[in-house]
Amino acid sequence: MTADALRDLEERGVFLIPDVLCNAGGVIVSYFEWVQGLQNFFWSESEVNAKLAEVMLSAFQKVIDIQAQYKCGMKTAALISGIDRLNRAMLLRGLFP
Image (cartoon, rainbow, N blue to C red; front, side):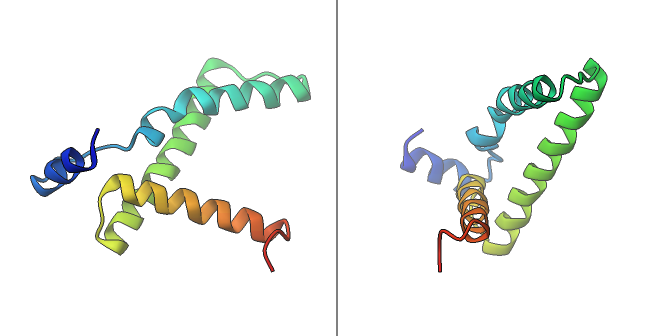
């Protein structure tokens, strides 16, 4: 979607879920499979779905909170959330002074 189209939709009050959230489910479940394989411990389908829902709801709520805090669109809020998470991880690893 172009920046102009995004701005137009946001101005009209259309609620958009950022692609990074929409497409995250498969990546998250792949991570769960990788972790299970490493531990040789496997969850049931209902456990995977419950863990996925927990992660997705948490990520969605963070983006909603950032949108309210900065009074911006969902796509911008998702970008802020991602950059903040990356920043904190890099600080913890000592990559920034």
